[in-house]
Length: 280
Ligand SMILES: [Zn+2]
Image (cartoon, rainbow, N blue to C red; front, top):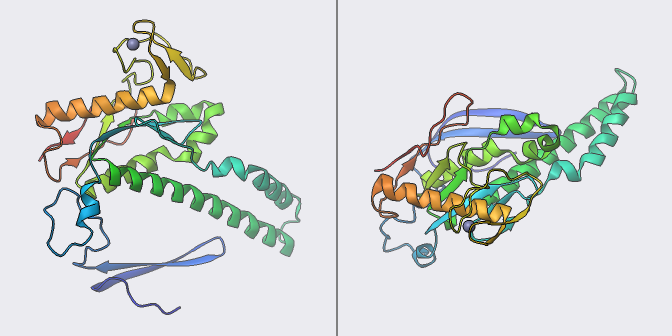
């Protein structure tokens, strides 16, 4: 392969790797060139920036994101992002290939071929998942300045075998990681509600809190105010409101700061930190 380097600078290292039947090379460049980074939307406009106009309409306001089982994500705007569920879609294929592999004789050429086919399918599933997550996190950080999300107890969810596959499929940790770094690049912020915040059980209209809301209940009516809620949209709205209010109390003025950074704590069983974010 011959390809010109995309970034000007000193090449520090190159790592060659192989995933299934594909060879990859990753090159580390020490560069001053930051053209690959998205512009922070709040930064003063440069005169020769032609794209300035379209930028002004982006990265504003707040959104709450409820990560789900049936959908990849539900936004407080009511949008539902279905998510690819690659594992589910290709599961039959995967099972067939795995069965085929186990029937092949050890050390045989056919076993080698079957193994390669299986590895290729696994790589494909990974790529589909990764692409969907990147699209979602890019879209969210591009459109919204303040993003409220839940601190999901993923480990607890994975223990529940019925949920395990879809949770693993959607990569919640990766979602949060991408959202955090992409937000920081664009001058936005991610507000993580603490794990015990009852985003699903609280009425986003009047604040009434239900004692219990089983996972199977998708729609419910608030006994206090009579509002009818879609479970996920209601949770997303609560996360949005929480993000906005915690920004107001922490920074006094919502949306006025430039380049605020958010430090999201990785979910851990021991640490419970609400709204860890730093105002500039
Ligand atoms: Zn209510």
